[in-house]
Length: 100
Image 1 (cartoon, rainbow, N blue to C red):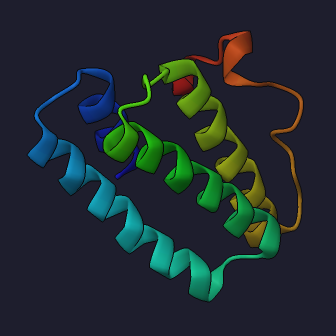
Image 2: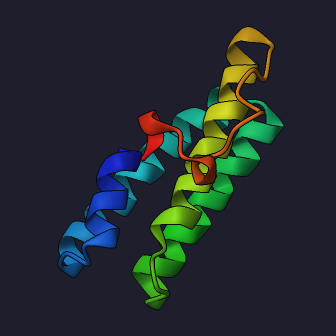
Image 3: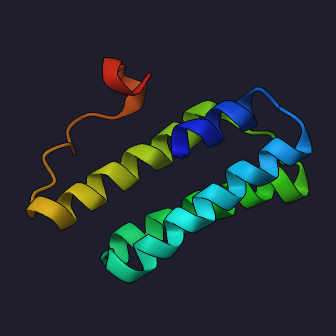
């Protein structure tokens, strides 16, 4: 869902597609509300706010900023699942191949 949202918003597809991507993220957010820790939920909230500003307010979508938010979500949810933040040493800006 997050990847589709990135594709739709970065390519500036039509408004219907952007709203559908936003809706998909909100559905995923509902699961986060039920299962995630406060740090993970906080990051998910930042992602939704960013997408909302892009879709509703026409704020310029920046792939790198969005990617950093997704990376933060990966770290916090991984910590939820296994109790370790073993991804804290690198960021997408440092060129990890699996997140570019």
